Structures are given as C-alpha cells and as structure tokens.
Length: 276
Length: 340
Image (tube, rainbow over all chains, first blue to last red; front, side):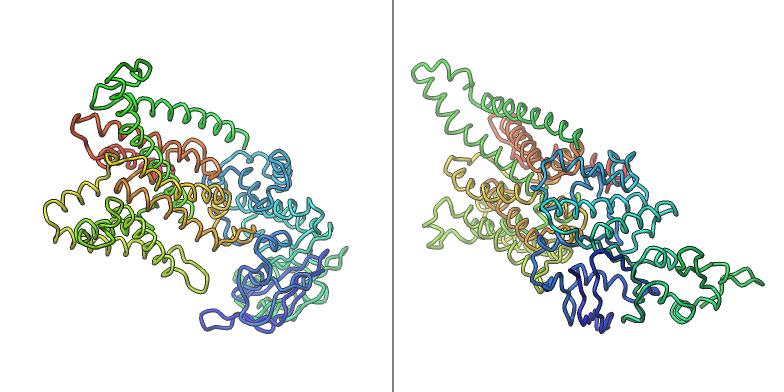
C-alpha cells in the first residue's frame, strides 16, 4: 500500500527540474525530503500529489496511476498542505477547517462535521481562534489552520473505513515558533502511527533527522541519497550538499540520531557564519 | 458556523418579508390610479381595468424585475468567487458587451433580413442571447489551452473583448438613423417597460439552468477561494467548475440583458452587501444575493416608473444613480479594512 513515483522526469520552461526519480512513500512511515534551495523538493511533492503532471514516468497510488483517478477519489487517499497559506478572507477558522470535508462532506451531518473540525482546531492549538476570521491570523496560525483543514480531508475520508491516506506537507513548519514546530511534526508522526503515509519537505535538518523514519536527499533534480536518518545525514553529506563545516554533525546520546549544531558553522574570529 | 447560520436564517427571513413587501408595493404603485385593494372590489369596467393593469402590465414587469435582479446578482456572485476578485461582474465575461453588439446589429442593420422578420419582436432578444453565448464561448476557447482555463487570460481577454465590442457598437451607432439610435440608447439604459409573460417564459428555462448550476457550484466556489490548487487537492474538478460557472453566468446574464437591456451595478454591489452581513460562504451568499437583487431591482423599477410619472426613467439610470454611491462606499470601506 504505497504512493510511488516511478521513473519521474519533469521539465518546465525547457529546463529539466527532476530526472530519474523513483521513490515509494509507504503507509506507516514518515518520509522527510531535504535538500538545498531549488533542488526540486516541492516539485517532487507536487508531482506526488497530482498537482503537476510528470513529463515522463508515472505516479502510482496502491498500484494505480493517479492520472487515471478523478480528483474526488484521489482526495480520499491523499491531502496536501501547500506552501501558499491563503488568507481565505473573511472565512472563520472553523468554517475553513470544515471546508476540508470537500466533496465528501455528505458523509457526515453538519453537527458531526462541526465536532470533527473543533477537535482538529484544538489539535493544531487554535481553539481560541476558532471563531476568528482567517485574515486576522498571523502567518503561523494561518498555516496551522490550513493543516487542520488538510487533516479534516483525510479524517472525513476515513469515516467509511478507507485506510488513512497520504499526508503531504510542503514546509509545514516554515512559519512556526519552536513549540508549534514540534506540535506540527508530532501531528504528522501521529498520522503515520495510525497507518497513514507522511511525506514532509523540510529545510530544518535537525527536525528532519529527529522525526523521519526515512530521509530523502534531493540535489540538482535527482535523489542523491535515501535511507534512515542515521545513515543518510553524515558529515560528508552536510559538507558536500549543504556546504556546512566539518565536525558539525553530532549524535544524540539517547536516540543516536544525527543533529547539527549551528555554533560549529560560525567563524570564531569574525563571529560570522561561514559561507558555503 | 452556528453564529453565521443563525444570522443567515434571520437574513433569509428578513429578505423574504422585504421581497414580498416590495412586490406588493410595486403592484400597488404606478402611473394609473389602479390600486391593489381594487382587486377585492371589482365593479364593472373598473374591475376589468384593474385586472388588466395588474395582470398584464405591472404583474409581468414586477416578475421580470425580480428575475433579472436575482439573475444578475447570482451571476455577479459567481464571477467574484471564480475570479477571487470582489470587483468582478458579469460584464467582464464578455456576455453583456457581446449581447449589446448583437442587439445593435439587429437594431441598426438587421431590419430587412428574412429571419429577422420571421422572429418578429423576438429578433432582438434572440440575437442578444446568441451574441452573449457566442461571446462567452469565444473567450472561454481563447483562455483554454490543453484543457486548462487561465482565469487571468480570461479576465484580460474579457476586458479587450469588451473594448472591441464597444468600438464595433460605436461604429453601428455612428451609422444608425434617428429611430435606431433612440432604440439603441434606451436598450443601453435598460427598461422593464416591454416586459410580458411571454418574455418571462423565454427567460425562465435559462434561469432554471443557471439556478441549478449555482446550487451545485456553491460549495466548490468556497474551495476556489482558497485558490485553484487547494480546490483540486480537496477533490473538486476545478476545470469543470470553471466551465460550469461560465455557463451559469452566460445563462443568467445573456437572456436577461437581451430582454431588458444593460443594467449595471446589481451584479457588483449586491453580493458585497450580502457578504458584509453573512460572510463569504457561497451556500448562503448565492441565495441571499438572488433575493436582495430581486428586491433592489423591483424597488428601482418602481422608482423608475413613478419618479417622473407618467414619463419613465430608464431603470439603468436609477440603479447607476443608487449603485454608484453604494459602490464607492464599499470601495472606501474595503480599503479601510484592508479587504480589497
């Protein structure tokens, strides 16, 4: 039971953005996609979601090409949080989360939808904002409201016994403070523990190494490395791909997962970060 | 949601009462001395006169004003939702300008054509309907590449198309004789004076299609406010929503504009007023806009035929005179609150 990219090629504006990408996302797993700016991480996620159509290759959902699935059916098995968190104007937070039910809204009556939306608003820490207009929220709060809407989509799909779907998150913690970064990633992990599949594009290597079961490094439009964080996030990778200094990758005492200290990348003489 | 729903319930009740009151007032008011209460005292020739005025003159006029107001407001709501632009109106989709051009062709050039004489007095509305659907179709085809319709291309092409149609209409006006010029000028300002039950019969099938589509589109248009990508990810067939929206706008606007002329501001102002009270949910805004549009246009038409009685002011002038200050106020308010 997977969402899988097979031999994907994607060109845009005459440029090859992605090539030779074969990558399965398994249910029950958190896959973190990391890589430098412009490596093609978000493009990869958009292809996996069906938002973009690959120039070559196929995206398969449980053995079926998603190109043959109608949007309605696809929406029952995958949901995606995009980078653009629309202000959604005058919609109240609770209204916007309920909209996540989408074309499956008829499965639940309005009271059940409201209860589910309330529960999700609480889970993303916005219970005090439920009746606030979206446009009055900060960027981080708006991002979490959209996360609740995306979770609503998968929760409503599950009401008829459908397996937990694939949750695709494109930089979901980019606007969050540290506490809410932990909250968002915890929600993603919980979804995987319930049997859903999770793919997250992250820039923060420490969070990626801490929460992912599988780490995928995208560089110059192709998969440079993939595997468990312990084997992938090495000193060589930090230097070669991310331009960080030697000795910056450490191991956590308890979990043995790798992490990077920013201090190791600061020039002691000038107190400035080193350029890659 | 509960607060918004209860507010919506109150709004529907209020609009329902207002609509009935406006229709009764419109039925009771007019250039002749015939009043609604005369219906209950039909006596001799006076009774027949009462029935004639109420049934054959004011009746169809009021129904036509209601239907036109509702149709234009619904079309405006759909356009604003689809383009995610609070200032969009049906005119942007090329429908009104194409209908105007086709109508001008018939008024100025078409008097001698065989099919025009066969259609008789239906020639102008039929040409308007054909013109509006053709205009919308051309814009849609222009903006669609590889099965994907670009709303930006459609919007820009709509503006260009409107300007070009306006120029062609100008050429026709330049060539028109005095009678045609007068007909065209009155058509441009809009009027319900020619409303008949037959005209309403021609309009109703189109409005039923538009109404059915609007009911289907309400929830998808909410999702479209979160942008097309999110609507697609939520499972909505985005391209079908766009094409059905344009069809609904063409069905609502083309036939009404062709029958009663160009009436501005209802399509822009009414959805705004409704959103101010109940928020942006299209499941509430669409029916409420239809009701408020019906009320405002029926009221405007009653004013149009009584302000300078027994002469009649074109209803387009009344809606523009009332609509412009309301529109400017909305713009100023949006600017202050940072909505627009």
